[in-house]
Structure formats: C-alpha cells, structure tokens
Image (cartoon, rainbow, N blue to C red):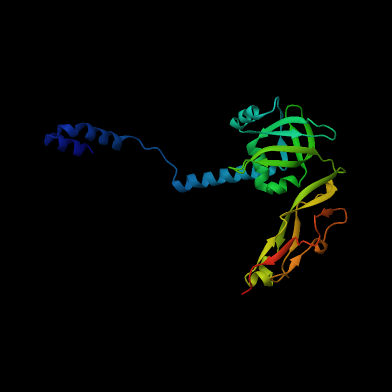
Length: 250
C-alpha cells in the first residue's frame, strides 16, 4: 500500500492521495481475531438449544399477576406490554379473580401441547408476588382470529380429586401399517377432540386411536375405544363415528 501511495504521488494523482493513505493505514492496523461464520452459527444453535431446554424445564407452570380493571382499553394496554388477560373462576364466583400473564408464557404451553391440549392438562398458576400456587384447567382459550395467538383465558380450579369436564384431543397412530392408508386413504377425524368427565388426577392428555388394521371405509365409534374405567366420554350421537379411513382406494 505504501508503494502504491508513492506511485500515485509521483504520477500527479493528488486527488487519490486520501484514498491511498486510508489503504495504507488499513494494511498496517492490527488485526482482531474474528469468529468464523460457522463458529458463530454453532454458538447461536447452542444458545437456541439451551433456551429450548429451559423452556421445557418449566413444565406446565404459568406465572400470573393480579390486574385491575377490565374492558377493551385495559386489554389493549396489556397487549402492548406483551401480556394476556385471564380470569380465575372459583365455584360460585361469578366475577372471578382478574389476572394477567406473559403472552410468551402461554404460547410456550401452546407449542408444547396445542390449543386443545392446553385445556386438557392440569396447569399450575404461580403467583410470584405472594408465592401462592393454584392447580387449574384452562377452561376456555380465546384466540385472535388474525394471528391465532391466545388473547384471553378462563381458568377453573382443578385439585386431584375435583370432578372436571374437559375437551381432550384425539390422536391417531399406526398410519404406516394401515391397509387403507397404503391404498391411498387417510384417517379423517370426524371429532378432533372429545368431551371427557373424570377427576383432575385422571385427565388423559390425549385419546389415541390405532388405525393400523383399518381399511378404506372402516369407521371407529365411541364403543370401539378402550378407555380407563374412571374416564367417561360424552358424544352427542354414538352412531356418528369418531374417525374413519376416507378417500378412494387405489
């Protein structure tokens, strides 16, 4: 760079002299050790993994805080702060206890269990300000139609021996072995969730239907399900199937 600067001065290129000086200074400046792109990406992935592990370690706990006031204005202010309003209803309490909690906290549970799954599990409301803890079920989740994010939740107490009525998601297994699926069909869940009545300690996280032996046109009814004795499932019409293998066979 210094040689270039001398040549430019001798050739009369005075206008380029500032640029040449800058080049010379850059060449002679000490170098800082910079991490490679791969190393930076590795650190990012590790940080993401650690964050994900920490998220899972929290379990089904939701930190909640007391709030004052209700209505659209209060809800808008909460939303700007990344918070979601909720109400904790006890038996016989029509107004309920007004709460708020972080949107990221409830969405963590949604990512873990799904919207219906959140309502079929016993959650723990943690009140950091007082140390109080309450076992509850999310009786009602209201979603923002434009973002599908949770915008309001109603909670009900759920001690282990409390009788509850919750919606439990339906899941299928055995698709890889199903004759109907191999012939071009697919499991169609007529009911994506079922109403379950049981004690809080007996709530099933999901109802699993094995389709490994089902062919195209086969149906599964409530009477075909194998359920624990302490769990009761209610449907509007027992003659309507819960699931069937739909589609045209090849």
